[in-house]
Length: 91
Image (cartoon, rainbow, N blue to C red):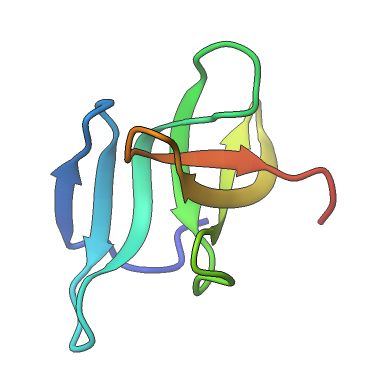
């Protein structure tokens, strides 16, 4: 599922690890390990992979795996400045 290479890591305040690819245009988000799944019940965390370029200023398309199924969605910021995953009901 990983599309971009992951070279540089940093930990955000909620404990998730952001991985970025280092390239000539500057670091770009590649994946998030232990990313919080914001709109699902409980405090679920998964590895979320970035699947494309940001489609708006606020969201980046992404995918994760839950119980063997690929779940599409997007990564965006929450109120505390952490990046979280939101799933979508359409594909």
